[in-house]
Length: 154
Image (cartoon, rainbow, N blue to C red; front, side, top):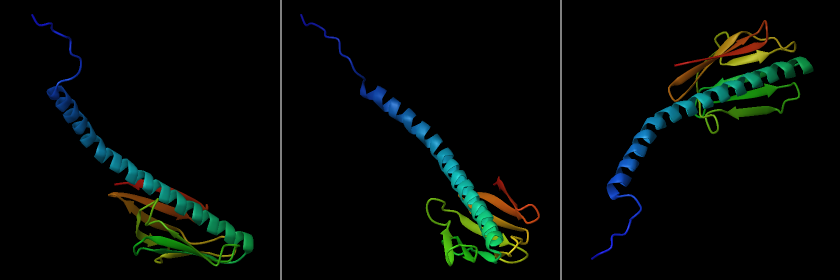
């Protein structure tokens, strides 16, 4: 008589079923991850632009000289801070590359793609429209309050 030994482990069918379930879960999670990453990049770029607008305004007021922020919608998307205020002669921020990877879709400061902060830190109101992975965000600069607001949507 043969002795039956207890075998531990999984059969090939059981392993295939587990792998198929893991593949389905990964397939459902991938689009959500991509959307979350695009939303994060969009928000990070919007905050960076808002901070740089505030810095340009502060630099203009501190030095009583004009500071210009010029936006470029060509690839890679970027903007440039130039002028006085203790800033380097010209500072370019490329938001079209890592870590942001966004596109500047539209810029409107009284019909211009530039905003100039005068020696008092005053400028015109304006909007910057940025996008990443199908998501769109609007950055609105309000001159009277000096506040930059961010709105995100599809």
